[in-house]
Length: 321
Image (cartoon, rainbow, N blue to C red; front, side, top):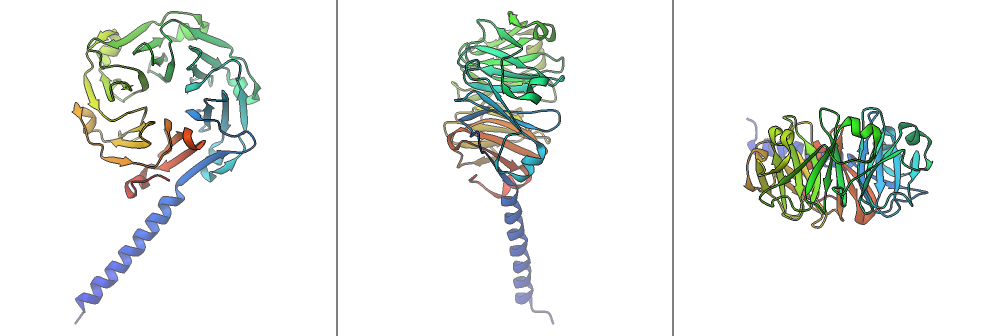
């Protein structure tokens, strides 16, 4: 007759070995980047090119660094393949985004404009001057950037409590151009606009840093612009940057609290105070997020590192070190 006690012990040993393998896999999938010869200097902006290269913007030095997708698989201390030195031009790059033509757009948070570096410049590197600039009084402490389905650029303006849109025709010209659309709130819920992104339904999500909330604007509100009451307000402590995962989960960094939150699609349909499905701690001033190939990348300004965590392993941990 089989011994139930021994059977349970064997099952326990198998589970333990499986958990050990899972934990080992989890740590193997935690990839940290350190720049070598030209070190990171308060990394604050992240953007992926169409080929999967990760670009990192350094807030203090105003340099932009490229790391290949192959390098991202290794992690560790790496030499950037390309460095654009925009010091003296940019002051505090905080948001970055590639357009379909491979041009790199960067927000200059402290000098209040949006810069475009050409695809050729991102290959050549070196001392770089933007090929064009977008300037307007609405761009006061511009923070993060995103694109909509029509090829327009959206910018969160931290100090003016709104997000603004520049059409493709305006992006081709540059210069002092007023936004084609402005979107703010009539109830004052958007205070100090931060991270922003679109979901698959064309709804715009914006961080209200001063309110401590995520705001959701409907596709109709995005189209109309103006001062509106957001479709939803999700209260969350000190949110900073946001990024959607392929399965619809929304990841949120908290710069001041050193946290990374995850909200599920069902939670995103609610309003009011929401308890994140998972909350990760242990990050030293996490700034911008970027997600690609089922990995969430975090610019960790306080440690001068960029850290990548496989989404499938995050459920096995609560502390990110």
